[in-house]
Image (cartoon, rainbow, N blue to C red):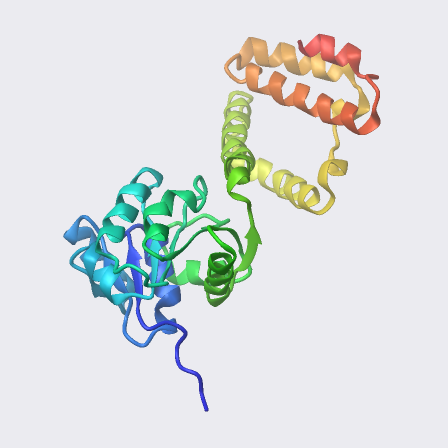
Length: 291
């Protein structure tokens, strides 16, 4: 006997990039099309048109009364108000799963829903969404999802939802959620800023296509770092080459002074990591130069 879809009705609160991708990915896991709600009817209808197989929900009450799983995919600051709005219409004691997809927050922000008997969790996909739902459904396969459940049952239910998306659940404790999110932003967001500074310096040096010049080097450094961690480091700091670093500092100060503070900060952080690994302060002369 063939098992039916795992959910009776799926609801999506939100109309943005993540909401659209999740609606498309989860659609096959319930018989009726997913219900999509948004504060703007115009944006909701545009999202449904892009998803292809979805139906409009007029309000949060429609999601609360019809769905056995609701995914809240709205901006971080909107999660609590939306959760409270759904909770006001949720019949007490219905053990539905309600999950949000924010990296910043854990499950505590959904407490009004838990108080009504819902299983609540955060399931943050560790990937970027560019507004191409068909492609992003594929990208979620094999991606990690940071799962923070309000209970063991909620964590299990959230892990099962992640599994239907093709993802891999990684449990993050509620108390560690800010540290987890800071780590992601430090890696991804600051990398963008770092490259933007390098692009400006290369442009000042007369390079017409900074991205083309940097791409092979940066891709290799990224792959080596992911594979080998800090042991992938190369360059003048590792060699303790004071003259080279001194030339860098002078050139940046003279031609790209806006980049100099970030260069100094990253170089000092690199020295910290080198000394942490070796247990010595053999690079004290370089540190004095940078400070």
